[in-house]
Every structure is written in C-alpha cells, then in structure tokens.
Length: 394
Image 1 (cartoon, rainbow, N blue to C red):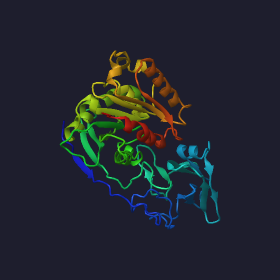
Image 2 (cartoon, rainbow, N blue to C red):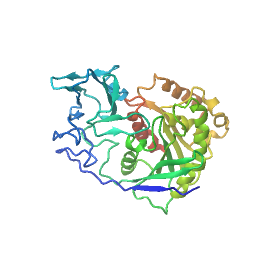
Image 3 (cartoon, one colour):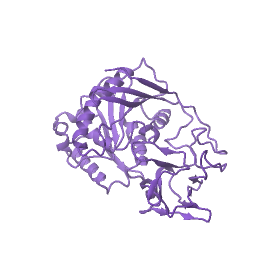
Image 4 (spheres, rainbow, N blue to C red):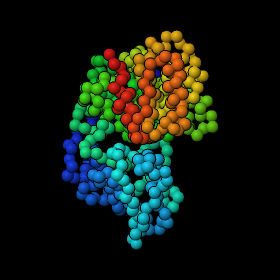
C-alpha cells in the first residue's frame, strides 16, 4: 500500500449560538440560513433568493429581463409542494421573475430553475450542491431551532480528507473519514463504510447528507456507539458506461478489499474484524452494499441498504443466502426507503429483498418512512433514525 499523498485535516467545528436576530449564513453554521432577517442581497448576487419565512413559505427570485419563461423544477421540492409539474414564475415590468410557494415541511430540498427550457442552479443561492452531476441549489426550510442534521452546541468530531493512490483503479482517489469527538488513538473503534449513489462524490455524505452532524448529535444524546465513519468514492467506472453494471461490482469489491479497508485500518485504530465493520449506502451504494457487501461476510457483519434492492436477491448473492450459518453472522441489517418510494421501481426491489430475507429467516429491519422519495431527505432520516442507533451494540 503506497502512502497517501495529501492529508487535509478539517478541525472540529465550533459550536454555534442559536441567534435568531440576524442573518448569519456563511458567517456561522446557521440553521436558518435563508431566513434573511436583514434583507441582505448575497455577495455577488442581485436579488434575494430563496427567502424562507417562519411560516415555511418560500419566495424565489430571478432577475432575467430577456427570459421568456422561468419555472421551478426539481423532484424533492415539487414532491414537498405536492406538484407533479414545474411551477411557473411571474415577471414584472423590470424583468424580475418571482414565485412564492408553500408552506412545506422543514427540511433541505434540492431545486433548479428552468429558464427558457434550460435547467440551471439558482444564481443567487449561495448553497449550491457539488457532486458528479450538473449543479443544483439547496433550499433550507428551517423549523423553530436546529434540526437533527444541523450543527448544534455539542462536542464535534473531525473530518479528514485523504488522497490515496489506488493500484486497482490506477489513479488518485479521495476518501473522507469522520472520527468522533474525543477520538483516542489508543482505543479501537468500529468502522461504518458509508457509500454514495450514482452521481455522488465522496464528499456527498458530509455536504448533503450531514452525516458528521447527525453522528455528533446522536453521540451527545447517548444514542449511538462512538464509531469511525469512512466515506469513500464508490464510483469506480463512469455511470453512463454501457457496461457499468457488469464491471462495477467486481471493481468496487477489489477496491474495497485491497485499498479502502486496508487504508482505514492502517491510518486509524480500528477493530480489525468483521464484528467491528459495517457497510451501507444509498441508491447505487445500496446496490454495492447488497451485491458486494453480502459477498464480503468475512469483512462485515452489519449492512444498510438504503433506497435499493434487487428483484432476485438469491441469484445476486447465492453464497449469502445458501450459507447455513448466515443468521448468526448478521448483527444488523436494514432495508429502508422513503415514504414516497414504495410505488416506484426501487420500492419493488426493496420489497423483493425484504421478502428473500424473510424467507431465509434472516433478521432485519424493513423500514418505510418519511415524506421524501429518492432524495437526501430520506437518506438523512434513515441514517439518523435507523442505521446509526442500531450499529455495534454491545
């Protein structure tokens, strides 16, 4: 294993006051960054957008005098608004397009503007998503205080960004690793390997998923075991490669066994056996958990399949389902999806996986909940409510 080339340490985040009298987005880690109590236009912007009121209504604005049509688009926000189609803006005489919608349930929603048929990120929103797909904007609809995924005034863990060389993929790779507050290198910690979905980067679970804040808050409440969370890049081949499916499982298993797990075990004090390791992922990461993780029962004892599954699980993982001792080898297994995913193709694959596990008598959690669909609202909820609290119980 070659030593990593770069090590960027992101120090523990400072606790934030629960200020409600001033707009502090991009100053503090504000839990209501788009409330805009001071009515300040974003630096480099020309209008305030979005503006979120305490009644959970939202106003979007766009200065585009030459545009012919402007619409709000994006699955998560349209679902929250119970709209099946895009929602048109209205234009005034000065070329300002405006749309007020809501109220919606407090959460973080992805959206875009459709300007003359072209989907673009809101140019005045400073909370822009970064992933392996075209840009998008995040809408933060606040509640009466910090949510379970916000930075609260509690002890905070640290996140390290590692750059390492992969002999499997012949290039430089990145991985983010969360260590809990008070991490002690003389102690051994269990590790959760947390994977993203198609179009996600290794940073997704921290930037959009808020995994570190969720873990911090649960630890402060005494609801989870202290653990390391390793968030590698599980994109091992271009998602639009015509042979993506037949190549990705073999490549990712090799990367996991030869590069990712050995790297974490080398650079952190970990429990180096299957009882101290869990693997979980969303969407494609859930498929990796099932297709690769179930075949790596020598490495992992706990699994989280989030918004994923397979219509023929026994054919996908024959060794797992034919193992006469598999019931005793699985410590925790979650098959979870959003409340609005059940009728989709993903819901059918999750149901088939659940049925196969039941048929084999393998104890597991089958959870359908929340108001989200195939989005971060669902995956943050599953991480907080089900996965983290049930891992590595003594």
